[in-house]
Image (cartoon, rainbow, N blue to C red):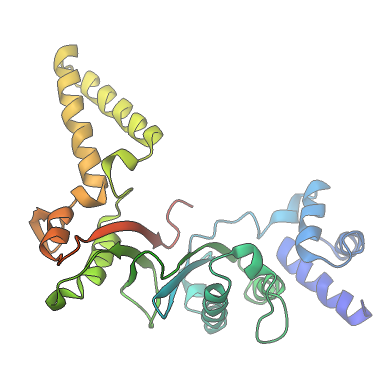
Length: 288
């Protein structure tokens, strides 16, 4: 590595970690110039400031969707503040990553090792962007829906540009649509964005989550002073409602709350019944 290259890397590492020149140089020497490994090296050495930026919470940012020939990719890229999420450099970085993510079919490991338009790897461009902007930025998650075994539909809530927003959902449906209602797939994706189901069917909701919810319900009822036999009956009713409210097919349709999603699918089916076989919903920062 040239002296200029080394100095540039030391500058980036100092900006990201807050560690002094000497320690940054030692870290880079030990890791042969790898910024990410240098951060890890400094943290293992117990240098207090080593994770200054990397330990912050990045819960803002953007979600992006790319559609082509019936295939769809999603990616979420996080920043610390909404201010940075509106930064031109950040947005351009996200857009290019979305295009590359489609080519990599949602594989983040491959994405990180892919060269961007400037000839530099994604992971290294990410480090450069962090150093330039001064905030933690992370490529959080990605998915890919191929065009086999069904049709894919995407929805972006309050899109700031085409395919870019804070909430994005994708659904894959099988079956035959009624010709007059070809947009039902997009409407189902819109429903998913609004209603945030946990699974398609009730029995597919994570059992640990259901057990935890039941525990909370029972404790709440017991603490309200209800007798044990009544508490058991009430808890069964409440957990049944929880399962219905969080399973996609049993949720009330956002555009007609008198009907369930399963009924809407039936109404819009033709020769072969419509069925939801997969879905995903990204909300920027959710769960961080």
